[in-house]
Length: 510
Image 1 (cartoon, rainbow, N blue to C red):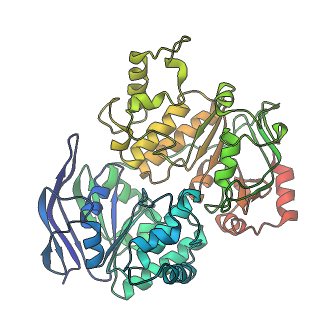
Image 2 (image 1 turned 60 degrees about the vertical axis):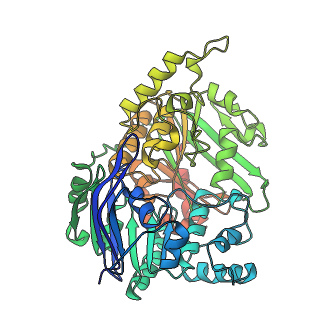
Image 3 (image 1 turned 90 degrees about the vertical axis):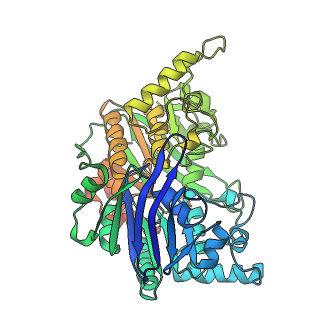
C-alpha cells in the first residue's frame, strides 16, 4: 500500500498554473526527492499535501484512502509534518512556545522544553528553547522548525531545503537520522537543490518543470548533469573560475569587538580581516555564530563600532549610517529576502527604491517611468520569473526574489558588495547565474564579501576564506589550500592558530 498518492492535482493562481495534473506516489519508509527549478511548483504541491493550500482538481490518497486535508492541524493528526523553507514561526514567542503550539496540549511547556533539548541532542541540532524567535538567525530558525517536525513522530515528513544551514558533519548526522526514520517506516519528501545530497540519500526522485511532472528516476543511477537536464532542460553553465588579481585594500576590519545587544545574541570578539579590490572573500560558519551581528556592523544597521574598527578605502566608517556607506560604494544583500531585502507587499519596481535612489530627482520626486524601466531591466537581465515590474515581491518564489534582490545590488556597480547567503534555496541554474555574476563583478574590480553556509559555494567562487565561530574569526586561508573537512572542523572553532596563522601570513592581502 502507498503511504501517499496524488492523482491529477492542479492549482491555478491568477498569474500562473502552479500545478498542472501532478501525480506522485510515495511508499512507507521511502525517501522521495522532489526536484525542480524555482517556480516549478514544488512548494505549492507540498502545501497542498500539508493542508495549507486547497487543490482545484485531483485527489489525495493517504494510506490508500481518499482524504481532503482542510488545514495543517488536520495534516498533523494524519501524521504529516512539514518544515517550510520560509518559516512559520511567531517572532515574539520563544522557540519552545512555537513548538508547543503544534503539539498535543496535554503536554506542559516544561515537558516540551525538556523534550526539545533531548530531540535536538539526538539529531545534533543546536536549539535553545528559551530564546525568542526574533533573536534567531535564519539557520537557527530552521533548526527549530526541524525539531518541531521531528517531535510529532510523523508518518510523512516534508523537508524543504533542510541542510542549507548545517555543517558537512551535521549534514551527515541528519542523513543518519533520516535513514533511521525511514527504516522505522516514516516516509520523507525531500526538496533540495543539492544534487549530490539527493543522489546520496533518496530512493526515488520526481522531477518537475513549469508545474508538471517531467519524470521519475532513481537518483542513484543519475549524474548531476542528467538531473540538471531533467530539471532545467540543460546543464547549468560551468563557472570560469580563475585566480583573481587583487588590488588595493577596500574593506579592512580590525579589532572589531561589539557586546551583544540581545541576551541571546553573539558578542563579536576582536574580529579582523580584509577584502581587496578584485577578490571574493568568503565567511564560513554555522548559523548563529555571529554572522548576523557582523553583517549589521558592516552594513551600518549597528553603528556602535569604533570608527577605525571598520575602514572603507582607508577611511573610518564604523559609526556611519547605511546610507552614508552606500554613497561611498558599499552595497549589501541581507540573508532574509522578505522583510529585509524586499518589502513583501510592494511591487518589484517600488522595491528598487530601497537602495537605488538614482531614480529619485534631487528635489525628491520619484521618476516613475525610470523606476519601472529599472525593474524591467533587472527582471530581464537576471531571468526573474515574475508577473512584470508591478508584481508584489511576495508573489515570487524564493529563488526568483533572490535573483531580483542580488541583481538589484550587483547592477548598482558597487565598489564593495557584501552578500549574505546569496543562493539560499535557489535552484542549480539560478545559483550558477548568481555565482557567475559575483565572479564577473570581482573581475571588474569590485571587492566582494560573501557570507554563506554553503561550503561548496564558497569553494567554488572565493579566493580566500575565514571562518566565524562563537563571535571570533579564524585567520584567512587561500581557498586553493583549504579542504571542506578542514573548514568543517574550523566551523566548530577548532582552528590551529599556528598553522592557520602561517597560511594567513602567506596568503592574506591585508
